[in-house]
Amino acid sequence: MMKLMNERVYKAVITSDFHMSASPDPSDAIVSLMKLQRPVFDAFFDMLIKEHTDLLILCGDNTQSGSVADMRMLKEYLNRLAEKDIDVVMCPGNHDFDSGYEEYYEQLFFPILKPDEKDPHSLSYLRRIGSYTFFAMDDHEGKRSPRGVLKAETVEWLKRKLRKEAELRQKIIFLSHHNLHADAWMGRPEFYCLSPSDVKDLLVQNGVKLACSGHLHDPKIYHSKIDEIVTPMLLAGNHMYGEMMLGEKEINYRLRRFYFSGSVLDQVYEKDRICRENRMAVYEKILKDSHDKYEISMMLERLGWWQDAMQSGTVYEHRNQLLQDQHFLKALNLLGDSAWGKWIRASLDASAVSSCSLRIEY
Image (cartoon, rainbow, N blue to C red; front, side, top):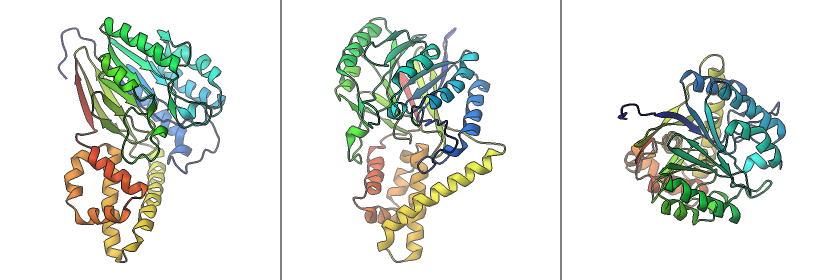
């Protein structure tokens, strides 16, 4: 990234779906490292400080249940950044209000988030940092609802503020928990995608080039009239996060893997091994129509390749290799119209470019 004389470049780390839980024994049935949260988050926030991060961006489901205890735990970590003058921009997700404590969210977090302007009808707000304006949207529909919905009044607020920021020539980044774009594997797109769907057109009309979201847990980049970064989850998969360099003329984004060390390393390895074996057991059950044990082992190995690529945002780099591999193609055929089969096909069809990196020019 070429830096202009006296140009301020902001180093941002972006992630989502912390699912931070204050429970003494959180379930790890879905998220593999839930029981190792404390050492994982301690190490991650230490890294943010040591690497001189300017900004942390969180795209929702920051807590597991939205309980007051969960929120206080998250605030404890965010305070560590505030003490080092590291800014935080954060939007909520559906899990953040499972307990229905919206009133505490503003009370606990807004002193840290420092909104420049707030939507009076929701917890949506905008924050200006240099020549960038972040719209951090509150898209939760209600208590325990998985859907992402912006209220009509919030959309009107968004329209007004987008016009104003565009007139100020601010570079706008739109943040939501739910995604702007849909994939073919989504049986119920309303559980994944932001509503109303014409918000995407509204952003494009106002010159917005980048949106960021979470919710899917695996990294992805959608390319359409507006680029959308789907941010990865730290506690599962390959433990990825995103790094953005925000300059006056361009944004450079790349995926990075968080590497564990010390006493927690062996525990993470064991948790990941169990999670992977459980996933492979699901595949093996579906592939049972192939009775050749060697063939099954080859197909499982290839599905493991795909899973690693998906979780690392490198499906594009491995796409041709996978689609030319007969064991992989046979596995894909046997998976058929199962949710797994649809998911894998959609990832291969949609991966026109890499999900590892993105460059946006202004």
